[in-house]
Image 1 (tube, rainbow, N blue to C red):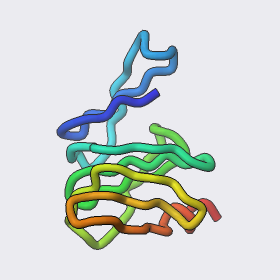
Image 2 (tube, helix red, strand yellow; image 1 turned 180 degrees about the horizontal axis):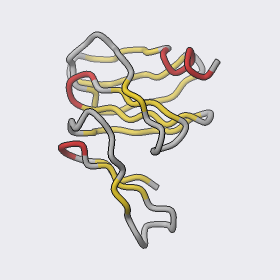
Image 3 (spheres, helix red, strand yellow; image 1 turned 90 degrees about the vertical axis):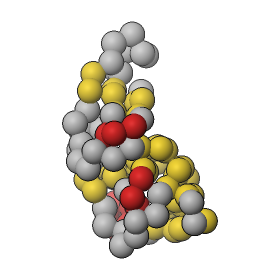
Image 4 (tube, rainbow, N blue to C red; image 1 turned 135 degrees about the vertical axis):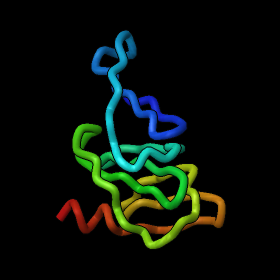
Length: 99
């Protein structure tokens, strides 16, 4: 279970929310959306942030060549659909990493 928020705050619970532990990730931007699909976790945020990894301990920043903010993320078979301030953006980066 994950809780995410402003200024890079990301917390993980392994016991259904009884205890929470901080997860340290870079960059420390505000995180706005998250979803897991097919063994990958995606977290979106301000400034074009997309973090991907198999779990919250192994998240890597993915270059998207944009500074637009993404509020949510939806997983599809073609990749991740990122929704934000300037519309909808499809990133197949997750598909590339899974191969």
